[in-house]
Image (cartoon, rainbow, N blue to C red):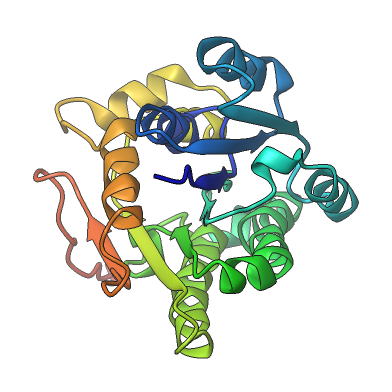
Length: 251
């Protein structure tokens, strides 16, 4: 069988790192991109340069992204799958108290960088009848206090995925949006500025989604027969469900 190649963004931690491990274990080559080269090099040390190609850059840096793509070794140049995983949430404050700089960083990372890389790889993915898996969130469907711009960016990812699939109709390219609920990774530590106690409190007794759960899900989607497309998949822990509406009362 011909070895396939996946490009996985945000590969230095959480869903991304676990997805690299899952696809390498399954026999794929992986282009692992992220900001922290030391973590990418650890992946190479475990699996070998013939299986993992590391690329360290911030996804918001379009020039660096294009240079990394142009410099891919021939063995990794044929990309069959793009996993748009890189993303972040910053801050938990309500909109009226939020930091505008953090809002813009979330938009630049979760939206602008995602569409830039997707646009860059579309010709090749079409030529190879490949697949795109975008990591969205239930935050794009269910509003909650402090979700403001983060939820907005994930709603964009979900809708962009659906529109992208319509535009790619007949090309053979599959597009999927995965929308996880509570998942315990470094995500909350980033959001709270490294507050481990806040992270521990959030996930206490929840039995949350793990990075491995999402990696297995992406693996399943990517290896379905070519005539099947999982267009949208919402995943929550059994202990989580959509909450009711809040009401403010006088008095």
